[in-house]
Image 1 (cartoon, rainbow, N blue to C red):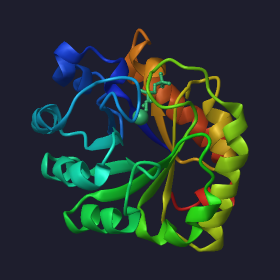
Image 2: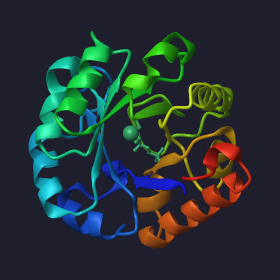
Image 3: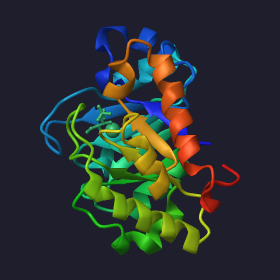
Image 4: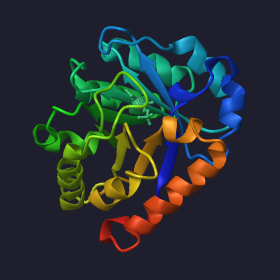
Length: 227
Ligand code: DX5
Ligand code: ZN
């Protein structure tokens, strides 16, 4: 079954606990950490993740768009994140970092910007619990979905099948009711949606609608069986 992770980047930052509650049916809450260096935008850090993890039962999926994740990522596990994603473009030692995140008790995930190919990392995939393929240039919510990423999603799904891995494939950026089916057909199984959820009149209904579309699109896919 598809997992839907609303991105709180599009939520009201002054009411985060309520905004988490508003998407109670979500699988994870996606928390975008931006440092104004790796991306040209600034959001939040460890103290807010710590507070949010105490304020909600929904597990936190922290997406670190920051420089030097080797130094900072472990602190997000300690702050209560259930999954921590670092960008491979920023990591000095991605294997060591993924192992450290897992050793501290969270799921380890690695993100690729649109211009970063997946093929050089084929041998590294068993070190990960999730791979995030960005479907916009990271930094802002509300951008248009990049269709040119669909072949990369498809090739990644083939690599996962080829090696028989239990690796989740997440997409993030421009995911909406208009684009989620394309992502799901290409092989994604975890979907981040910011503006499509928090921009909707009923965020919980938006989560359910996204999930229904993704599940319908993958009903026949062999790789989706057992999910
Ligand atoms: C973008 C962030 C996304 C963002 C997605 O850099 O990583 O998580 O919140 O927002 P939408 O779904 O509006 O494209
Ligand atoms: Zn994100």
